[in-house]
Length: 135
Image (tube, rainbow, N blue to C red; front, top):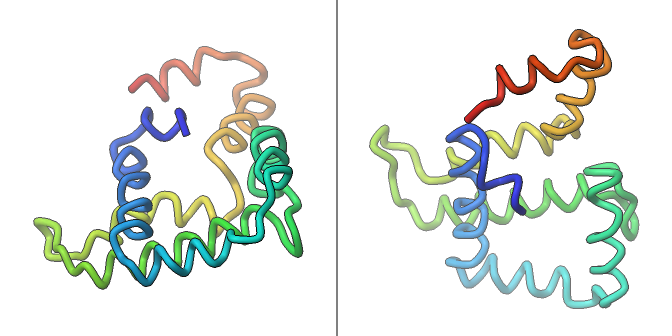
């Protein structure tokens, strides 16, 4: 979770919004608790060890971590919409999920995008990453 407290503003806002949508709505909280109720300690250890290596492509149960992310985002969005707290632009707080929704939809994480550029257009040079991503 450390990667979410750095970076562009829109991503910094996304993590708290995700958790608020899940934890501040009893229906979504109970749904999430039921969803993971049968996950074992081994399941948690597996995810902790494999997700940093394989990202959203990490196989898990009958799908992959991307499937989990999409389901988690849907539950959070529902919770935020039910809260109906509006931003200064008049939109509910689910607007803050957009940046991580895009990652879940495409299946491409920020790290994978940067690695692609490093091996491609940046030609294994790190100068661009420091220039473009200095927050």
